[in-house]
Image (cartoon, rainbow, N blue to C red):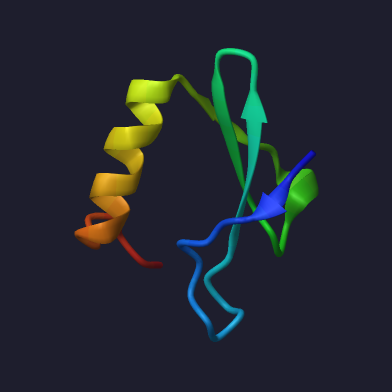
Length: 60
């Protein structure tokens, strides 16, 4: 079951949803849940969060 990430912005425009998996986490865009998801292992999810906190993703 997906839930809105606590790391999502308060403005409602930059939201991701996360779901706990047996072997990691799935992440998807809350505005386009049918658009697919990214599945990451626990260590990969940790690196994803670090990159997101440091604003290392391009905007476009």
